[in-house]
Length: 111
Image (cartoon, rainbow, N blue to C red; front, side, top):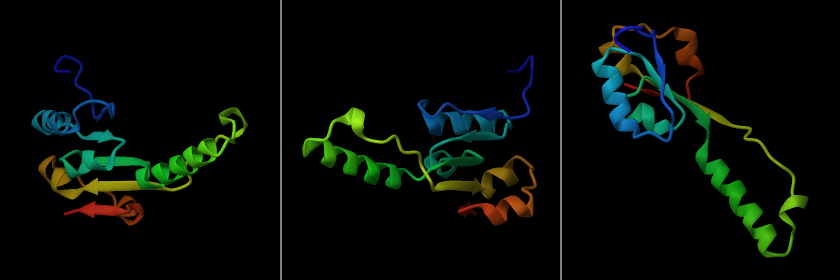
């Protein structure tokens, strides 16, 4: 990363998000990831489906299967609600100005 300095990084959500956020901030790189807790732990932004919705839908599927439904017969569903979280503390630490239009669309802004 030092040789081919990127403008930003996207962090794989399976990585330890707190450490990834710390490293990105240390390297002065804007970092984005999927889970909301990435932004809560110091990443610049996160954008993902709302996990609580996914868990509720999973419970419905489990209930249907336990009552005898065949998994292959159940429809594939995609998330319909998403959440954008912006960490303004991180943006300020990186010297970034987050556009007002993006902040207006954010579901949560961490001050």
